Amino acid sequence: MRKVFVVFAMLLPFFLNAQTDVVSMIREGKLKEAWNYLHSEVKGGNLSFETLEMFGNVTFEITENNYSKKDITEYINQTMPILEKNAFQQTFTKVQQARIFHKYNTLFAKKAQIQGATAALKVLPQVFDNADRCIALDPDFAEPYFVKASVDDEVPAFLGDVAKRGENPKYRMGINIELALERDPENIYFLAQSAAALVKRNWSVEMREKNAGNAVKNRILLLSDKEEAKKLLVRAVAAYNSKSNPSPIEKAKYEQALKLQAKLR
Image (cartoon, rainbow, N blue to C red; front, side, top):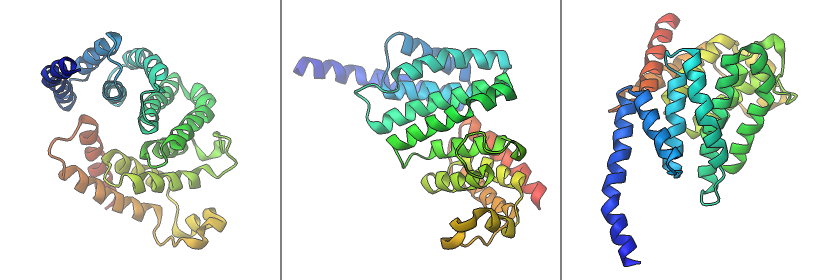
């Protein structure tokens, strides 16, 4: 046992340095290099939670950048089966399982989105089911709530409740935005995207109250969508400015927030 501990202690700096190098690649925008490294790791049998989570994160970063649809689809196709197969390892906690399965679900949704409206609409109920599975594993996990909000934002109102939950999807979007931000209030991506979604919805205070129905009894809705969006944008800019080393996605969302702020002045 002592020998095992000594060997682990000797190798630990190597593992930490390797992980730091990957983080540096991501911060510098070297996403394909980071993906190639992590792909070789998981193919070589490194299926730790940290490696799988970072692998999913890098693939998602790639989907948010200006690569061709063909390239993005190829990265997604190679990443998804690995995440799906290994998300529910018995050695993982429920919190860890939720995070890896969530990475799978975001890529599942992205792939359908790339394939077009028909494919996307077909899989949306499954995206919601997957998000709810993550929430059941970890109710404090913000990202599945935001995935559901993003789906309802993307789908035009005239199509109704494509997630088949028997709810007003645009009202549900607002609730899931709130639930996500309650759990992760300084997430730049959430803040910028939520502001854009509210501007698009563009409900007045009266409209928000009308659509809330009975749910509004214990809540006071004092802001229109545009006014709430302005507040979220202020928070997004502040969150970005507090970061010493923001990721490429955070930088992109910060720039998006500044543009939307200027538009709303």
